Image 1 (cartoon, rainbow, N blue to C red):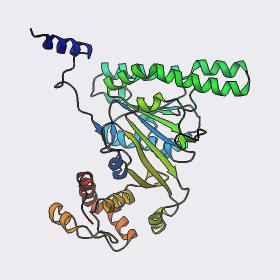
Image 2: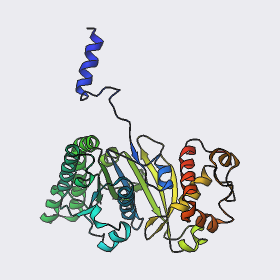
Image 3: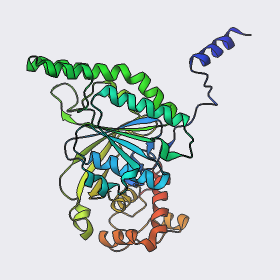
Image 4: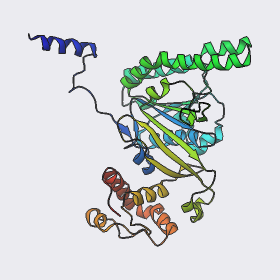
Length: 352
């Protein structure tokens, strides 16, 4: 056998026997909000870790709970929510999810406990019957990285050492912990096609030479994540929502992709958050406008789209009529066709 073939066989064994033909393509779960699907290039990756970062009151937890709900509705998936910050109340879960049987609220006391729970969930998912989805977790959410302390960090707190020293030591131990577990954590999450959502805080950086915003957990967290989203919140309704009676009490949140291993980064979208999560109808209108499917300055559809898809020529005169048109159950098929058209045009937008 030629020497080159021996080398290839040896490398394939080192790579756990996976040849190019056996490697699975990255699968993504739709978020069922075209705004999030657009910026993530199709949804959240299976078998990967997704970070939802942002400042306080930027609807990170609401977004995670929203994803639990829609994935259960459409894929029958159940999951866990590790509420380290102890901020998610039962009535919040009932409002955002409805059915408490599809999610278990966990309270891990250390980072080691959370990582071990993910490892066991991944093992159980691999060994279980894929049809019995209620018997294992498919989604595991951590809220949040900043609040979850490794045992070494907790020991420092208990020892009551000098304040400045404690802060620096704790940060280093948290970074060292995640750096140490990164290879194995990524491995069993990927093998089991588990979805891990990690909520993180975005804080102002004290380093004058680096990026203005930093996230706790050390530099290994960005490498561990397949997808990273950063939220900013204005605390006010968007300009479009102000003109829609049903959304006048909503809050505008802007999501931006800062890492996407298998897609385009730096895509961004503004979403209007109500008590039930991100509104899907204004998101659809915004994405359609950005892709040239809706003509600039109106709610008329591009003639090319109308001809190819069979969609109506207009959604209505004005934002509120367009919104109510899409929300009307009688026009559900139009909503689905427009959603599909947005995803088809995402990489090839029309000229306005």
